[in-house]
Length: 502
Image 1 (cartoon, helix red, strand yellow):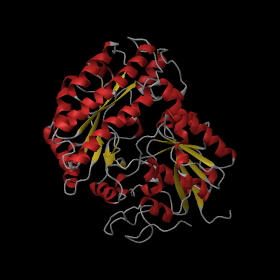
Image 2 (cartoon, helix red, strand yellow):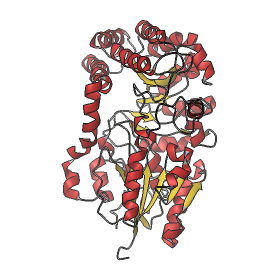
Image 3 (spheres, rainbow, N blue to C red):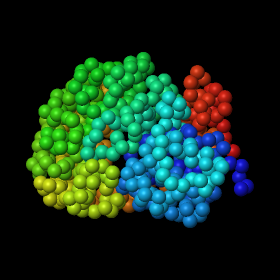
Image 4 (cartoon, helix red, strand yellow):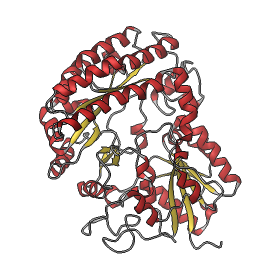
């Protein structure tokens, strides 16, 4: 081989322009220095297929797994070693092996490092299913410098503090991706925040449930309150039943609390193992928003106990509670979940075409108490009611009357933020849930990456690290960082910026 270093390309195939995750950045951080690595988000960067590469890692969830398999086959035809990871192949590793040389199940840092080391010795050794659990205390910081973060929103800088979920909801695969709930050292979290690019306006904790360990979360928020910076997070609703928790989160900089409320039907909550009490929801929403924090709810329909009347009941609750943000979807029985196994056993799966497992109004199973058409129409109706101009104007007025909502901003900026928050949602959900527009969006979304003309001129996905830093205007790690000399976190030497790649 003429090149001095092997090349590895880490590719993610999101099913829409969603909040960035840190999965591939974490793998890049543990990649040995003998291997040059890049990260490609196929919705935000043009993939250069014809440049030399030795190892490709592909991450995709169920709705995009067919695209991942097709891409894997193209690389393997060229003699490139291909590894696939993510929720879907963790559930169906044998299926993944039909298209790739190796499959990574669950968390990937330990196994990716093992794969890279095998590549350096003998690429033919990279075969089969890999499983492993990383030691969180020994991990370097995620290589966010490789993510081309300017192509994501300035309000969603990704930060991670914990892994896993302690719950076992029948519709969710999160617990099966990790072996137990664990937390990173608080200093690890603080260092991620300190090294954010200067243009970032807010961050988002990508944890499944940031507050599963309340003692840890309170200690983290106490540290964050010393130098608060706006953030959003996802927690179970019980966290917000305690006013002290909400106030501590607010002092730490919290501006959004997202929770999976899922349903107002208590039978559905009980039947899916949700361990939630719907009668508390109104009180929780009021408590969050009276503290000046946006309450965000995720709602799911199509469980065996749901009837068509649930859509109207949910609309009445959302209208009366003035919940500031919500998203709606049918139940998605992803492979590997108890729900998928049961629907398949009972002959109630309408399709196993993975491209249709996108949620919202795409129904892939037969509900027990309504028709598939009623389920799709109900989700679509509720979404458009909630995101109508009339209702979003009502929510904007409620936010303006709340003296703690965006209270730190001057009046003109406060009005702007409230307006954008509400009226952007009207546009966003109209194009997602109006069938004719949604179909057009589905065809146009892959073209989003071509707005970056520089990619065409560059002709490679392996940007030099100097280019990356100039593009991101990243803040250097502090010279006292305990992570500064860990593999992948920085170049050699404490407190230095990354050097150009070889």
